Image (cartoon, rainbow, N blue to C red; front, side):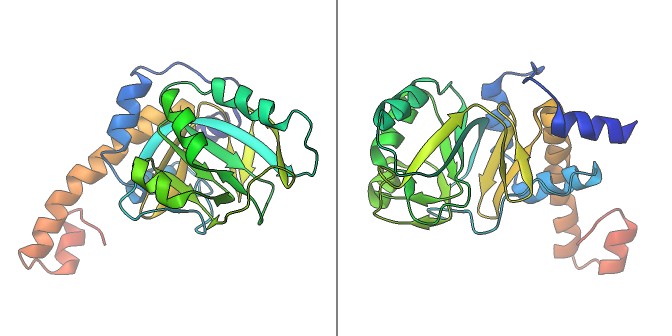
Length: 235
C-alpha cells in the first residue's frame, strides 16, 4: 500500500543503499529546485518535509544538496569537555554530507562559524543547515560554503549551548530528519527527502524540471492559460 511506503520512508530504520552514488545523487539534486521536489513529495502524501521558512541561506544564490549528518543540542552552561565533544563530532562527518543542527529552539548562540566550516569541508561536507545561529558570516561567505540558518550573532556556543548527540533522529519544525536522509536547500528554503525514496523523488523532480520548459514555451507563445492546462500544463 502507498501509505505503508510513506510510513516506511518517513519512519524507517537504518540508512539504506541506493542504486546511484551519494556523489551523483547530490549533483543531480542541485540540478533541480526545491519547489519541484516539494510537489513530488506532496503527491506521495508527505506534506511536512519543508523546514521553517525562517531558515534561509546566507546568500540568495546558495544551493546545496547532501546526505544528512544530524546534530542535536540545547542551551547548557556546562563547559567540561565541550570542545573535545565538538572535535569528535567533526571527525565523524562523512563525505557528501550536510550538517543539520536541531538546536531545541535556541535563540541565542551561533552553532556554526568559520573554523567549523573549514574543518567540516576538509571532511567532505557540502554545507550546513542550522535551526539556530551563525557567526563569522563574512568569512564563511568568502569560503563560498553553503549555510542556511535562522539568525546571525557574535555569541559562541561555549557556556551557552551544548551538543547532546549526533547521527541520531532529530526534528526541526514539523519535519523528522534521520541520518542518511537527503537535504536540499535553495533560495526557496530547505526540504528533507527520506532516503528510501530519494532516487524516485529525484527522477520525478527532473521530469518536472524538463516538462516545465515546454509549459513555459506555451505561455511565451501566447497560449491561453486554459489551453495550457488542457495540454497538460499548470500554473
